[in-house]
Image 1 (cartoon, helix red, strand yellow):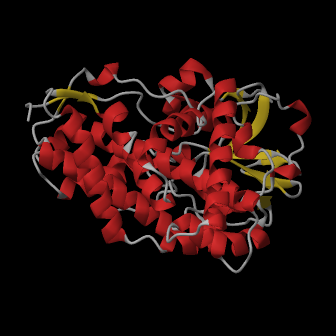
Image 2 (cartoon, rainbow, N blue to C red; image 1 turned 180 degrees about the horizontal axis):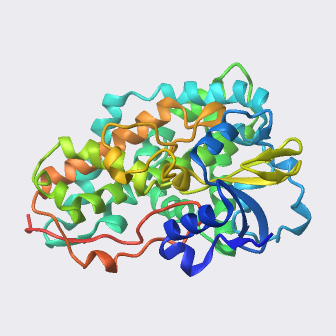
Length: 396
């Protein structure tokens, strides 16, 4: 059975074309080839993906099950997301239920009002740096920085550590050897942070994990902190940036740009359907031989969760974006035992909503500074986000 490359210029330019071709040629489950020649199955169908994430006993999260480890290159860019390590997200379901609850409880301690106020201050500081120029790159100078600066506050990190963390967390989600090294540096910093909080606990999220009576090890906490930071930063940054792109390029949003609030929520929800930050999730591993979408999945096979493709499944969304408003049945936060926990979703929504509203309040006449077709997307099989978003506005 032929496999389709799930990487490269064609994929990064317009992944939607690749998803549609896969669906046409193979149906809801398709054989694909990840970067480095690594084979996998991509679950494209909405119903099939819902079935996979809803049955963790059949499709586990422990990567030690993988039957292709022997062909994975040592410098594989996706290794950071599949290599066995003591993370709650890479544990099978029983362990995940216990440890995942600890992380969820820690996230639930974040006060949404305090977070919103902190994000407003962060946004004002960033806007002050470019408001007088009359132009800016909203990805590089704004959306890419806000989530990590907010998470630094939640983690109790010093502001001067944010620039290097921003660089490394973003790089770890791309392709190539540098992505592997960036991942290693970030995990090492998380481990040092855990040790600092064990010696001198405070009231931050990390201290909550360190003091939890379940008694997580330093390596377990560091692994969970890295994954939480990576997901919070890149997904939230891209969610905000993709929503701003939509509002700046779609005429139906233009009428509300000047201080309009109602359209912000609509744009954020539509992005989750049409340009979801997490395009694909790696992954799940079959715990036994099984048929899925008419394909023979073997025990230990890797399944890529095609979240973007499933959201666009014509079997459940025959009319495209017309059905997005008010519809929250997308799979952008995944689903089931390993879905994004509700407190994390609320943190991300607070950051994105506040970030966009502050920008529109401060710079209400913001316009796109280039032709929409000149915008470029970051090369990543996992994420969907712009490399830049040039805008113009009246200097303030």
